Amino acid sequence: MTVALALVTCPPDSADALASALVEAGVAACVNIVPQIRSVYRWQGAVCRDDEALLLIKHRADRFDALRDAVLARHPYELPEIVAVDLDRGHAAYLDWVVRSTT
Image 1 (cartoon, rainbow, N blue to C red):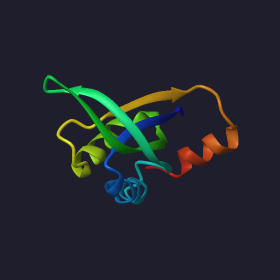
Image 2: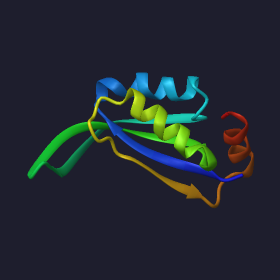
Image 3: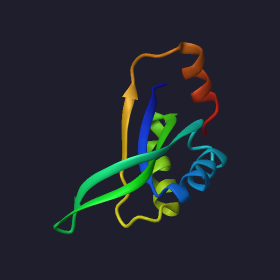
Image 4: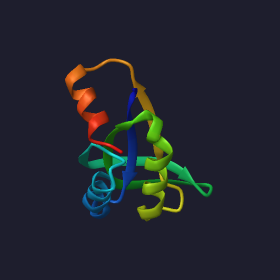
């Protein structure tokens, strides 16, 4: 079973609650919170700059849809960033733990 890493940005004051909800719902085995990043992006024709937190979410690749839906249900943004990459290498025992820790 493949493990993936999802990247989600959010307001810093939402990060802990969102991370906890994903782990408690069983769609993520672990979420690391990088508390301070600066995002520069184009939104509705303007260049924006915001301080955000970055969530690094380890999950089963075959459960991405459930993870995405859980993020969308709780995320404060109109269009949240939710992207994922499959992990083709890693410490086998850790990857097995991710699979066992998610539903």
